[in-house]
Every structure is written in structure tokens, then in C-alpha cells.
Length: 266
Image (tube, rainbow, N blue to C red; front, top):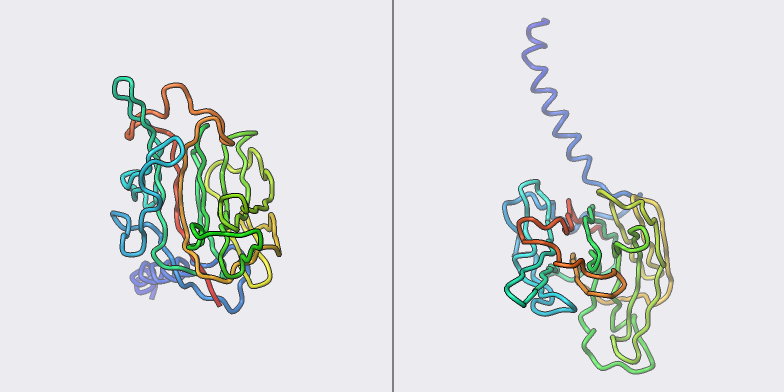
């Protein structure tokens, strides 16, 4: 009997392990009635371009966004790199952004992210509306035109903080915004989960499953796409680019890592 038990116990252990792994796919907050509708665990050998596109390729702020900045590394993480090429008198900084090809509305959005971000740059997990290039007037209508929803922006200033922000009504003279202000300065090193519960009544933001901000203003009802990104801007809210930049593509330490992204809807 003991030998029989010993023979089967590894199998039983593996079966229990498989079951426990499946149970790990759950959000940081209680979401009765919601189901998983989108996920990327970044466990393949390359970025899945059937579900991801590249956002704002070309010159942006003080950098050039290129596809090569966004890769899946050997640890099963999305990695977005910021680096600098110096060629004679020319200095070019590089960053990257990816966006979902599918649009989503109300639901719970969660990603597990590590921001190894240096001065002059920032990283973000956000949702963008498709009508942002349309003409806008002083009479705003975010319900039908959409809202930029910044689930997390990580800024390496003032102790290295995070913030949640909303932007709507275009980006010109009628632009409006609202935000949480600086949050958790010095407490966001390493991996953390960042979440947003977007309902018809409210946006509720979470860090590691704890509510950090909410707003009932400017609720979008239109489908929008999700972005994971780094950006570089000298002498902006993220500070000054270091003298000499960020090093080469291979040696840069200025990186954003995403373990997974998941979206749940009713």
C-alpha cells in the first residue's frame, strides 16, 4: 500500500499544482459577475501582433518611438526600453508604445508592472479614445466622444511616485483634465498591480487591490483601446534627461516590465 501511494503521489502533486495555477488567474479585487475577456501573459517568444499594434511610431516629444523598443524577454515579460544612440553630434533617444487592436468599454483592467524608469522619462498603463483628433468645442461631451484614462503613470520625480489622470475634450484650447495628484512616493519600486474599475457611474483606481482614487466625472461610454508605454521628454514633469542619455539598447537600465495584462467584463 505504501509503495502504491508513493508511485501515485507525484502525479497527485502535479494535478494539485495545475489546479492551483489556474486559481491564480483572478483579479486583485472582488468582481462577482465579471469574466475574463482579454489577457496577455507575455509567455510567447515574441509580441503577439495579432492583438497588439504599435502606437504613435515616429518622433514624439524628445524621442523617437520605434517597434524595436517593445519586446518579450526571456523571463516572459513585456519589456519596453528607453535608450540613446549617439552618432557624432546627433543624439537620438528611443521609446516605445503598444496598443490593443480591440476596443473595450466598461470593465476591470489590471496589469502587473515594474517601472525601472529614469529621470526624463515615464511609464504608463492607459486607455485612449479614438476621437481625440476630432474638432472640439467648449461644450464637452465625454460620454460620447471618449476620455483618456491613465490607470497609472509612473514618474521618477519627488521620490518616484504614481498618479491617475483623466483627459477629455481634445488636447487644444478646450482640453479638460482631472487627476489624483502624486501617490505612494517611494513605495512603487518592483512589481505592483495597477487596476481600474470603469462603470457607467464611476472610475475607481487601485494599486495592489487597494482603492487609491475615484471619480464620477467625465465617464466615457464609447469603446477605447489600451496602451502600455514609455515616453521621454527633457525638462518636463519627469525631470531632465541625464547627460549622455540612457546608454545603448543592450545596456540601458531604463525599462518598463509588464508581467501580464487582463481585462474583465460583465
